[in-house]
Amino acid sequence: MMAAMKFEDQQMTLKQLLSDFVSINCLPDIPVTGLSLDSRQIKPGNIFVALEGQIEHGLAFAEAALNKGAVAVLCDRKFDQYCQQILSSLMTRIVCVPINKLEQHLGEIASRYYAHPSHNMFAVGVTGTDGKTSVSHFIAQALDDASERCAVLGTIGNGLIGQLEPASHTTPDVVRVHQLFSEYQQQGASQLVMEVSSHGLDQGRVDAVDFDVAVLTNLGRDHLDYHGDLDAYRNAKRRLFEQPQLKAIVLNIDDEFGRQLATELHKRIQVWTYRTQGDALPGIANQLSASVIGADESGLKIEIKSPFGAAPAHLSLLGEFNVSNALATLSVLLIRGIQFDEAIQRLEKLKTVSGRMESFHRQGKPLVVVDYAHTPQALASALFSLRKHCTGELYCVFGCGGDRDQGKRPLMAQAAEKYADKIFITDDNPRTENADDIVQAILSGFKKTTACNVVHDRKQAIADVISQAGEHDVVLVAGKGHEDYQIIGSQKYAFSDVAVVQEFLGVAE
Image (cartoon, rainbow, N blue to C red; front, side, top):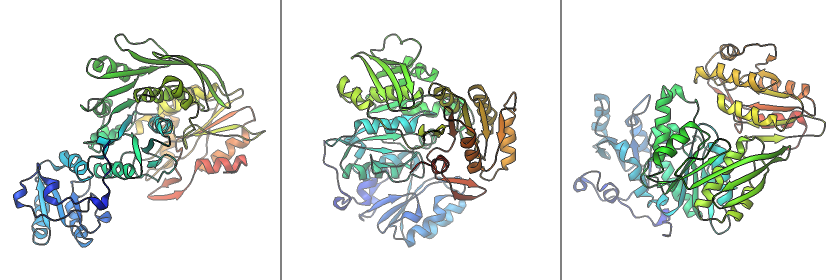
């Protein structure tokens, strides 16, 4: 493996960086200290990358970047008269480099600047509607050891395992992605697991990332406010599995889209499949399956079958869908070359991810589980799975976010009504939408509302459920998971489902 290049050792110039993208004869040989799409993050010697945004073009912020020490501005060759005026003003004071189809080349430019870090790491990309965070963290936990450290990028944080820093997006912008690969390589990581969102794929945020393995958890309904329809959403996910540099792909064939990809792609690339039901697919050598043989408050007992043998395993995880997540993890371990017996031992050491089927219990009180489930299929899966850990009644607390896909609200209600005994509808992140309107849209999905309680105040809703539920009951608090805020109007307030649950259960943090 090549040694990682440290930032202070980099001596790249603008001319070296942009060769192959523009005529370098017209470029000055000035040193470059970094790239950024955010003018607020510019440091002296950086290049400011000005792309067209949803509201304003990046060129509108070029003056601010210049004032912070930017030495050059990159932009696309296509822009309107307003941008032309800005550019004309800038060109007398800073190097401006228009590049044809800049957005399509930006991943390559960023990868070049940071010395192609993903080329020298074992990189895994995980996508899907539900389960991306859990699977990413399970894989990273299982891969990480003293000799080969593993980093993770995703919803609940970025960094080496055990050293996560908060993340603002599931998938950062493409420049930041390559920068983070480089940073973690310098910190000693030789492996990296990354959540790859549909937005990230559609917007090119993982362009030029050299993934070795791509994993699909499932495909359901989500983000249709952005993609428009399921076909566009599905096609965005598909891009991850059609990247030419992939060594292998791991697919959940309990999922229709997973079976479709496996059937289409197994002759072109090494395909690994996993399932908890149904039949194996013909013509694919590497297929894993598992069944649950026991469930209690401590987790799940399962039986795994693989081309490398069969083995029992105890997972310290709640929720039957975590069996699928464990199989996805096992597939990546085997692809990595870890022996089957060792891989099983690593599965048994997996720990719950923050806000993902995270359980809290106190004697005499109900078992309370906090989960990020915010789609109809995730809510249904969480409730269905918890039924196996429940000897009493199953309670569900959930809401739906405002200013987001409205069509899923009645579907969330249907999932809750099908699997829960008692339901509390509350506010999630209403944002700028009227909370009563959100609740009414949810209620429209119920056949009967007699088992429903509406308590807008989320803290009060959680308190009411915990006070009502008995010691043999299970309570699912769904929708926000790891989030430590609630967005009401345009304001973000400190709020944590986990902290509220701990407070009313009387358990220590």
